[in-house]
Length: 163
Image (cartoon, helix red, strand yellow):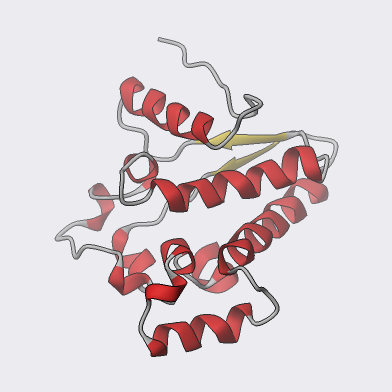
């Protein structure tokens, strides 16, 4: 629910802002008006929400699930319809872990990784732990880890799977 109520905009729409139609650009500008760089809005907003949760439970560990939206949920945020396929059963379709490493979403997932980096080293909330939602196989988990590593040169996301 954070996306619809808190961030409000599809991350790929922020990345493709200059390519969007006038109506989508106007809707995004109304939300991101204080930003010169639209993707930074996503990173800052998501980082602030995660940091608020981490700070509320400090000094305890906090487990945050990475985004877990189904295509129908992502389609309902600003700019989302342009990027989301229509699926007969979004519950088992293009969502969660399988989305993170998919070529059409890798850059958007990178924004989520930047938000986590902002919370952990920049804000100092190092008790943040990540959960990869709806990870179907060990191999899929490894693919997500590989994608996370692309967005994190210092190995912040390195985790180990048992198995």
